[in-house]
Image (cartoon, rainbow, N blue to C red; front, side, top):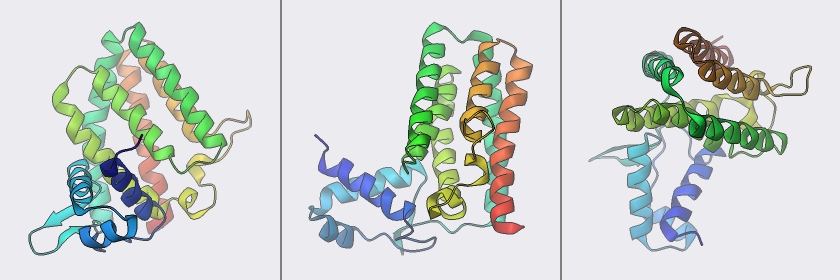
Length: 222
């Protein structure tokens, strides 16, 4: 059974996904608690988690709020993702094991189901896929910063990717074989890692991160 804190956590994310809390808007503990008919403690804890995850910002004067989005921030965000995630892909290719491979195949199946059913929770599967690679790199210092980077990236997808506007985006179009482009990119990425070729795995990760970045730039700034 879902706890009150988990309910608050997911509800606040959904408010952002469905554009009820646009960039720069406050996310007020008291208001959320009243809307969800919850006490303020689980809502407060959920807000703390969302700040830690990177989906919300906070300050002493403003409290919690949805971060403002900008081209400069997007550029910095994806530059950092490129550095860390490419290095992780390279390291995983050197020593991935049967458990890692089984996990990757399971995530690909899960992602395909979510895409076919057009569930907004695709962002959760995307987080799992990227964190699975970081975790398999066996560098625990990368896990938290990459999680924050992924969640901050999700904000740009929530507001700029037409999937969350009720349409299919460029990165979620179906290819001639019936697969979604995003699913295909992740399949190729996992195969590159499983090939145990670190240079190839690094290259494919770079292409994947770059494709998402370019999609967002085309959608908002072109």
